[in-house]
Length: 432
Image (tube, rainbow, N blue to C red; front, side, top):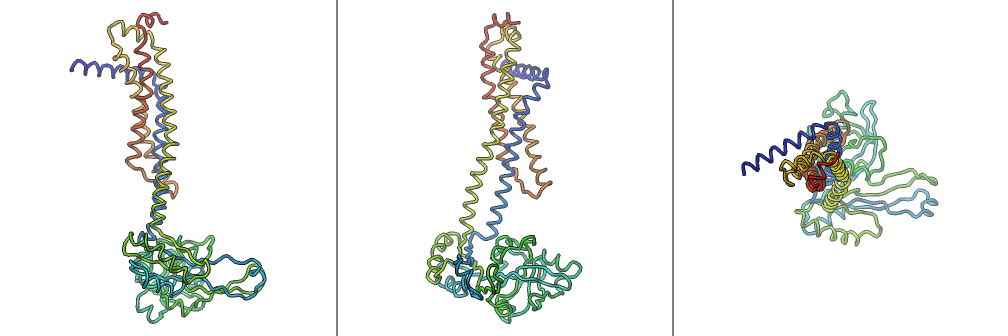
């Protein structure tokens, strides 16, 4: 056993020595494996990061939540073009929220929201923003963190107070030199005292409710009590008609209702129940239901498919690297035919020749794999620092890429090693 171990060590040393005799060729052969391993790790890290961002955005909506949004029904083009001063009445109502809370089993809380696009002013600063009329439970359900001061409270709601909480991004733009909590902002002729600053988590999903705000920051949001919104702003929104003449009026009581269920099991059942309930009181298709839990599961499924596709594409590079190793090793066998004959004549067995060439291919693939891992781990880090893209290097992607590189070294090295061992010693000695 000891003799066999010493023979194996000497064979490994001989294989490494043979590779070092042709450093440039060995290095170029390893490049295929290096780039293959690097691409597998980097592509999976980028895919993992993109998937993480999408899933976090969905999680911020709440896995126990069901979101119902008002949806403007399709217009009759003939009617729309020939009517002046018409009024559209659609969307969710306060009664819808009350019915859902009292009728649907498993409902924990119901959060109503009104989202209106308006302009906010402070001294000479004038910015477009979203006025969000809601209730004090909003931060707990919608994923909003209060960083200074407070959010609107039950007293504000009861007495229709002119108070507001604003996002930190809006505060920085509106109050570059003042403390926001000592100021008041003006919206549509009404002043609202700032009582708190919040860090918004889900502004992207709210934007679609109040129309596009091209070129404007996502966190230009102001939160006021629902009762204040109803009394100060009202439910009738006037719009200029782009085609034809006159003004179009839209009456929407609520733009969104977020239903928080007691657990995820209740979410699965309540989805269909809420749709059935709303259909009884809505004659037109003026709402949509979004279930974050379902979106999250779809995102997880998409992530798995995405990783498989990216991994498969990157694995092709490893395959090409393995073919390169086999090609070089076959050329090496032809090149060293006389050396093989001499070794066989001096008593070397077939397994010694096989081991020698197999060691060379494994050293090439393992060495290339180690370098590829280092480059592959560094690449996502560089990408994250140069861009805003999130990249996540997982242990399983590193293990997978390195494991495949080692397996390729063995798989693509067996044939050249076997071909070398099968050479006839006498014919090999005659080879020039």
